[in-house]
Length: 314
Length: 314
Image (cartoon, rainbow over all chains, first blue to last red; front, side, top):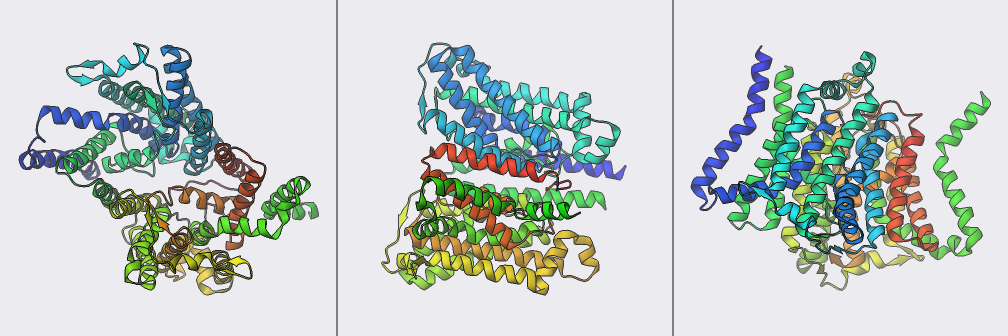
């Protein structure tokens, strides 16, 4: 019983911090508390958050996907290349297929051979990166607007752009997947105790591969939306995204050791990060110090998380 | 029995075999490959990262990992270039001290605050990157002192200084690992940390020393690279972590800890150097080179999977 209260308290600390922070910032920084600024924050975190939702599933299953950045670049490039050569439909389908294929490779290799997914996806990072640069010969792809593709990201409902809605939709979908389906429960068990999961008869290879596929899928969705917004794609588009995504997860309190966390945590983490970065931007703090702050936040978040977990264990 | 033993030895030396095979293929193409100039080229290419590989091998034997080496290297280089105006020695010493400080910080976070090394060093990495960008303002900075670039560009008996430093460090740290109490304790802690504690080994001291060593070597590599190129830039060190970890694992040091040697890690980085050299000689597209490097990492992992038990790292 006590464990449960502690656990719930711990999972609520992030939202408490977020609310307090937003209240303080709204009072101290002019322009921060406006609706337009909150929409800005949501817009700025939408792409990273879509990827983070997929990554959460991988991390809960005890893995980590470091190739999301280069997969993002690949999908963005493919989207623009397909748009220029063929049509809007292929500009959407081909990147999704690519994201799913990358997920299958990552998930199958790491779970079938019991390899550390960090190292496998580190290898995939350079394979996909090299491939992406190779197909466009290192050049940025400028798309030719065809009247449909670039309109996708311009859609908005209640002044909130479509990609924010996609993010909210995927977040709810993945949370349901995680909490209400057999797949989700099996994934949590695999992340907590892979040996036990195997003994119980769960097909760990399949479940883990699916989690990587979902991650690849959400990366491709984010990439297509960004391509549609910019109608340009650089082979370096997603460089470093993996670290931003992991930062959001860690700050939200998703445990990197697997088995613990949910999409809700991730979103709070992403919003918290977005709010802090936004506040730094509004107060004209140089970009470099934003990075320093981000690093400090990661260390702080991990420390708090480790402390909390030890308290629960004791 | 005998064939088993033979296979065992074959497996132990497979990197050397791969190197020999590549050598034979290349020599049948061009004898330039085995010329003295080319061999020096290979070593020159790997010497900077090779220095860090030594520290990373210690960490991986201890079941730890350091992702912050690239940014440590960049920041040391920046310090060495920036503080030249107060004297070369000050620049170099502050670069080295910074490396040691980062190493101690990582060690502190991992041992005292009990954070996972991947997460903790990810934090320091992002933070150090911020410092690098704060100092360089995202620009490339040239050194002003004419003596500084001389250090790394001097050759002794036609062998460049970084190569000599690299080889000497490999020998010294192989001897320390194999022939001293410290080295034996490193294996013990990596093999079974709880048992080591019971035996009265100062586990935390050993782990902190390994982090400090890695930080110091990253600082040294940063200073040498800055001297070699006579520039400092935030783009330096972006892929170092991937390259260095790949090298150590290629060499056959296992992520599950407790085994491996500096000599093995040396073979790993040498293989990367030779592969790189071979691909340049065979004029393979540089983007394809990235792909091949990643593929080799994944293939070697799968090949090793038979011998490796469960490798769950974080």
